Amino acid sequence: MTKGETAKNNFLMGYNCTQAVVLAFCEDFGLDKDTALMLASPFGGGMGRLREVCGTVSAMYMILGLAHGYTNPKAKDEKASLYRDVQSLAAKFKEDNGSIICRDLLNLRIKGKDNPVPSERTDEYYTSRPCPELCRYAADLIDEFLKNKNKV
Image 1 (tube, rainbow, N blue to C red):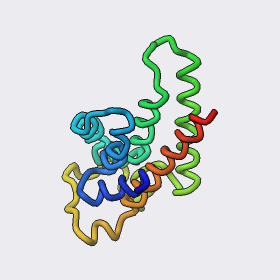
Image 2 (image 1 turned 180 degrees about the vertical axis):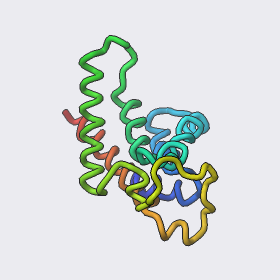
Image 3 (image 1 turned 90 degrees about the horizontal axis):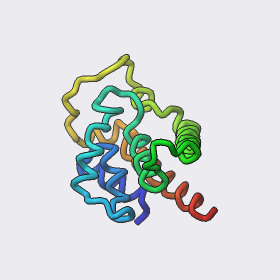
């Protein structure tokens, strides 16, 4: 099963979009699943249903940080390299999906935050939203990106 298929299945099990993608990579980084799920939990719905940056995009950045992040606050070159990768991933996601913004991806007319109460996960919910496929796409994108980056 690909990382994307795993992430999509995680979302269909009820995890939010960010959790679904991050959870697919826990074993790769020796990350405790409960810690990862708690850390990723506020980012669903474009950051707590603010409908800003898509949670799957935030998840890609979290995974990128685990793989190529830095800890030294003076790591200027490492920071620039990481931000270059963030921008590259954002551009690819936007090119293929039209936006990195949750409200745009969901075709919502709201400006700003949405009701903080999550929508019921019904059959209609899953068929009316691109979220399961975006989970699949984002997990596969970051997986492929990391594989190619590690070849260099």
